[in-house]
Length: 88
Image (cartoon, rainbow, N blue to C red; front, side, top):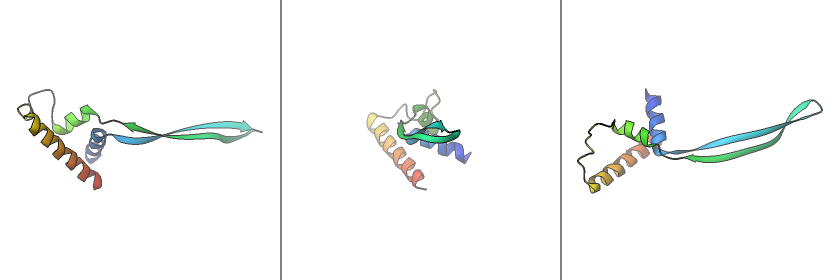
């Protein structure tokens, strides 16, 4: 269960990942690496993961009655909690 929580929080924050593309060539019956390209891609935060973490499932929630200022403060608090968990 801890792994699922960790994955959800990673998706909620967004993350960078590396994509590796390798091209091979056959020379004299030997396979050799011709090109290797590593690209870093950013995966943006996932709203569905954020909703799961916050317990929002389409039904009424504690956030429905909050003012804009309260929502901004709650967002900042949650981002800080995510950052602290990331540092663990």
